[in-house]
Image (cartoon, rainbow, N blue to C red; front, side):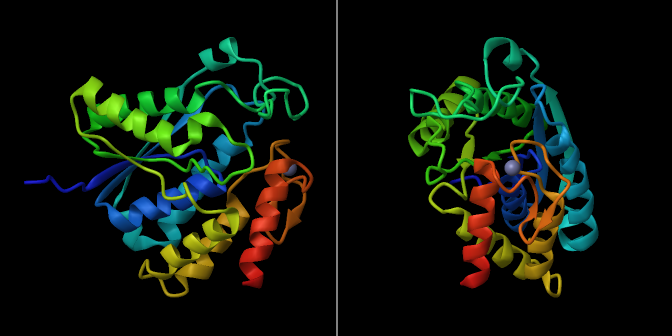
Length: 242
Ligand code: ZN
């Protein structure tokens, strides 16, 4: 007999992607907990917006609120010691000769998943949900489908626990991510939930690499220029024109 998966741990940073993953998990599982990692991000705004997003989820989607459990924050300061990246150092975003942006922290997602699995083990949670995506512009190798499958196997064998890694955004682009959020909100049981979830994401999630929250665009706050803002804006535009 195959055991049913009923509980999940969402890797939740407070950005658009992980908030959509949170809604995805809440629409499927009975118990959903969240985990974020503090690796001394240069911009603390994303870690802070995560608490606002959780509060707003509870208020606007009462049928999800009862499933939403603990929110964990793990200290990963060591990541700043082993890597030189524009996410933790005061250097500008740029592409490197390797073809990867200098926001790339080698193996970061592998570390995140390993720690998330250890936490899930202790909390008795079965599914790890993460917003990694192969269609993203950045092409981080530790976000690829093969990497996720290898991690699922390694973690399940190494911890002797059958973990499932779910990646609802793996094959979709940013426009489809907005559309997925709309559909999940729409099916949540909250009247007007589709528009409400999109609005929650626009208003409260944070994506901008520069940590800019001064200017409010149709797609949310951000500098509007960095690759993360450009991607989010383009996706939102295509979503609203569809
Ligand atoms: Zn930006």
